[in-house]
Image (cartoon, rainbow, N blue to C red; front, side):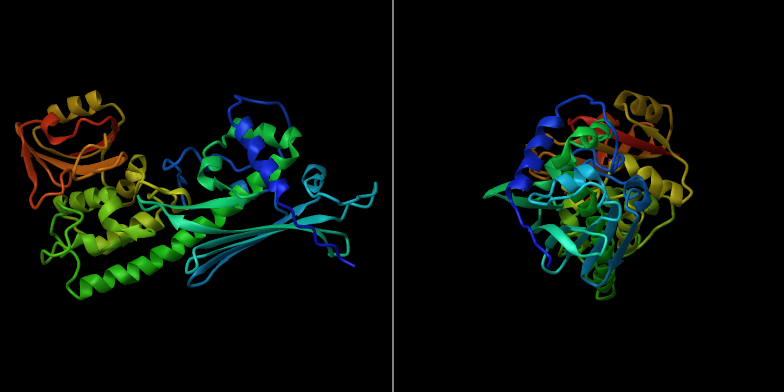
Length: 397
C-alpha cells in the first residue's frame, strides 16, 4: 500500500537555508544537480543562446519537455541520491534496498491559468510511490512586463526570482555537498526555468500571430516608418503601442526592439516590426521571461546584428564609445542606460535603449529616447543621451 506524504515545513526549511547560504562566498562539497550560469540577478537573467537543457538537466537520467497551445510541461527522473531522499520525512529506508529507487519530477506551466505546478515523488524498485511533495502557485506579470511567481509556505510568500538571483556556480558547488534541503530548492528553480522558457516560446508564437494581424488590419507600424514613441496607438502607420511582446505590451518594454528596428531601416534592411519582435523572442535576445522585469537584454543585441551580418563595435564604457563616435563623420549608434526614475517618459527605474544617428560632424538625431512624435536633434553625442549610468553601446558604420 502506497503512503503519500505531504508537508509544508519542509519547503520552509529549504528557502530559509538557501537565503543564508547565498551570502557565503564559497563552500567545499560535491555536486549533485547543477543549474550552470543560467541565473544571475533579477532582470539580468538571460540564456546566452537558445536553451541547452542538457547543460542544467544533465543529472536527470531521462527527461522530456513538451508544449501545447497554452501549456509547457516537464517530466524527469533523477537516480537515487541519499541527500535528496533524506529530504522526505517519515520515510524509512533499510540499508541496501535503495539501489533501484528513483525520484520523479513533474512540472507544468499553464499560460492560460498563469499557474506553475511542481511535484517530486520517490519511487521504489517496483515503481510505487512511497513519498511525494507538491507545489501549486500562481504566476503573475510584473509592472514592467516580466513573469514571476511566489511559493506559499506556511502562510508566507516567497518570490522565486529572488532565489534564482542568489544562485551562482561556486555556491551551487557547495549546496549539494552538505545541505539536504537546498537540493530541492534548486530542483524547483531549475525546473521552473525549463517550463518558463518553454512557455516563453509558446507565447512568442502567439504574439507573432497577433502582431501580424495588427499589421494586416492597418493597426500596426508600416514598414520603413521609424519608431519615436513606443506608446503611439492612434497615428496611422505608427501604432507601435498596439503590439505585444513577451507577456505584456510592447509599449513599456520594447525599447531594445525599437532601436534595432530603427537601425535596420537606416541600413536599408527594413523589417516589419512583428518580425523584429519575433526574432528577439525566438533568438533569446530578450531577458528570460521566466524571471523578467525590464524588457530585452541590451548586452545581447550583438546577436541580432550577428544574425543579420551587420558589422559593429561594442562598448561598455561611455567614454570609449564617445571617442569612437567623435572619430567618425557619420555613424549609427544603439545605446543603453539606467534611468533615474524621474522622467515622465520613463517613470520607473530601469533600463532604456535607444537609436541615435550621426549624420554629420555636429548633427545627431535620437529616435526613441523620448516618447515624442519626431526624432530629436542634437549637436553632440552628449546631447543625444540621458544622464543615467551607461550600460552598453554599439557603433555601426
